[in-house]
Figure 1 (cartoon, one colour):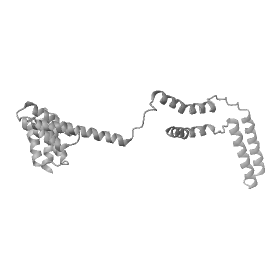
Figure 2 (tube, rainbow, N blue to C red):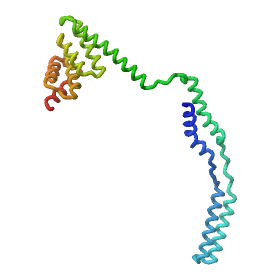
Figure 3 (cartoon, helix red, strand yellow):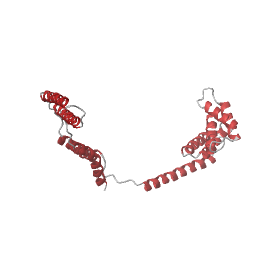
Figure 4 (tube, rainbow, N blue to C red):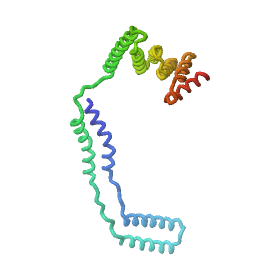
Length: 240
């Protein structure tokens, strides 16, 4: 069925070009143009005489002048014959385009590749999400069982927050990063927790979140690249 559609689209795309090459255009050289102009002048001159706009003597003299010009135009040289690509050759090239495209597709493409409907892909993505949920839940359970003074607890909650933020679970990410800074306060992680909480609240900055922003800013090094963003959030919390 797809091949029929490809053929129809090729015909529709090439049809205007083929029609344009089939048209014949009347090309006049300089002698033909001059002859047509003089003929029109003769007709106009006869009409003026019939309407009484000019005298017969004026008509005769003007007629002689037009005939003299007509004889002069007859002595003009013939225009050179221009050689160009024939219509048949151009039409053949246009018809060969879809055939060449088809050959390239059959050579470099994968026409035998089965279709990939949307529904199975959505099911596969949902299964992958479930697997990720299982992994994250196991990580969360293992972190809960760790002692508070375990040095790997901080890094584990940081990774958990990153995993939740990557899935746009901002509330869970903020909670994980808050658990991390309970073990060891890191200003950057605190700023991440405050930002994730702001995203989870739809852009609203609660007093608790604003206080976390301030704590992160007070402990941040002077060259921290996120200082300005935190300052803007603090200013936003004061004017909302």
